[in-house]
Image 1 (tube, one colour):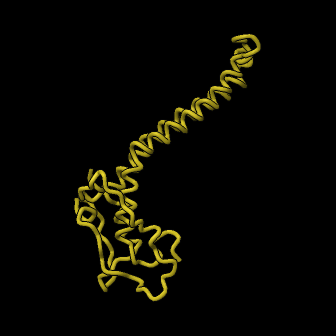
Image 2 (cartoon, helix red, strand yellow):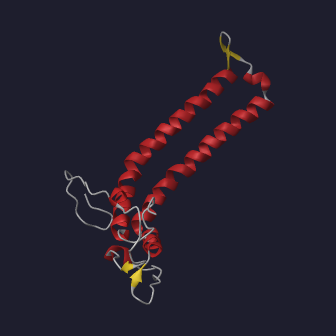
Image 3 (spheres, rainbow, N blue to C red):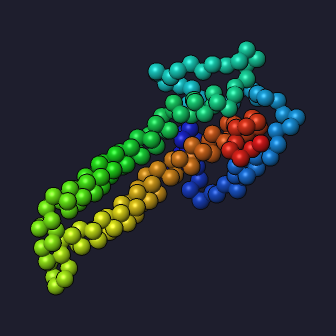
Length: 173
């Protein structure tokens, strides 16, 4: 397995140095900018926007986050997210609007008994709840299998790049 910047990772190794928890609570006494530390993979490639660097050659946290956002790994995570969410939203919204439209425009159809006192409207309403839980399960599964690992790699890489820059880590003051 490789990280988002192409470094090989040992499948058995576990990181214990979480930069989110190792961040300083206070940025007192630290410089506003640190020397540039941008991975080669993030700065290569056609069509990359040029990074705006201050005259002293240092890079701000905003520059690093923008560079990561423009990177192929981030774009792939966002693409995987959109490929699931857009069709899932469209299907679920159509199912919901269809239920509401049929319930208001065809009350005779919705009142048709299916089994005893259970009618089509009750089954469709329960189907709304069932489809909500099914969609939630499918989204969580998709995120776990297709996005979480890549997003975690991006988080690690971004935090390694921004370590020591005041205000770069969420929760830092």
